[in-house]
Image (cartoon, rainbow over all chains, first blue to last red; front, side, top):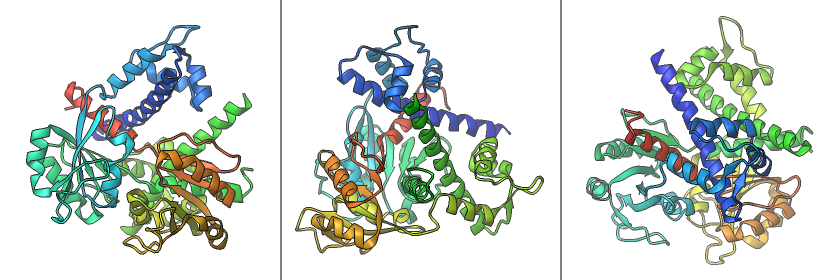
Length: 221
Length: 221
């Protein structure tokens, strides 16, 4: 019973986190447009969100806005940056310097505003010494422990084929990494204290398929 | 007002679709283990889901299960496959044969069980004629219209730099593609009837950052 309650709580906080990230993107946009204040209704209307949900989520973090005025855009933005813990720079490494690893190394959102990709690691000696287009180096897999220690890396990104993912996760955990983003399509056996977030890109295609089916069935014009 | 209500409905159906995809993965796993029936409680317990939400979501599609027995695993799985519209094969093309396009072309979930990647398109003539490791060919961008018509492609996947994404979206729409998966970190101006789903991979890092911050703050052990 204790376990279920715990997983539920983690599940909820993860959904909320996703929404906080969305609010942050909206506020960053409004700030770039020079807007000073915004109400939950305006946020909802402009970005296709739910205003009651916005108020509820923000109230969790002590943000209530001012009646008739709304939220202070810059202040709320700073508050979200702090809440998400991206007011400091977090170092990450990518394991696997194949097409996916290379794409992630140069992915705009991965190496800016709070995240820094230190290196890609690979077991293939012919890749070490090379860099991504943006200059992220590929280093030998054997240097994992040293790299994590020296750069205080707390995020590992798994971009290797499924059959190697568990081994990579275990090695990351041994090296002291506390959070792992997994792109391999396998279930990881977890160690206590080393969180995994798995990315399942296929879900996006299934959502589009659902839309197409509704068009075909005449549910949507 | 009408617009907001509509966006809300679409928002909700998109969230529900995501959950249906998750249920489908759970049922596929249970079926592979030879399990015949499953209750919403067991599903919730095993896969860290919410049992009331499961019952509510499935009831939307006319699935109620049998009291004391639960759902028939294979039947419910088939029903979800149909609901998501992946009981037929949908053809997709990837625009951009860089690292990201190549990684997506060979991504396990993108070329199996209901989805077929026809080709990658690229404007770089030095890339055409090559293939991904799994054999997906790179063809000239100019062949977009012909390729979409001949292969009845209804999904386009944008894997080009942000500055080209809008142009690619418009060309896909002109060619008759009805659904677009966008990996470029830009807002796309939509055309009526051509749905976009944008993938924001950074949200996953922010969620891990939130977890790390809670560990640092002593909220989580």
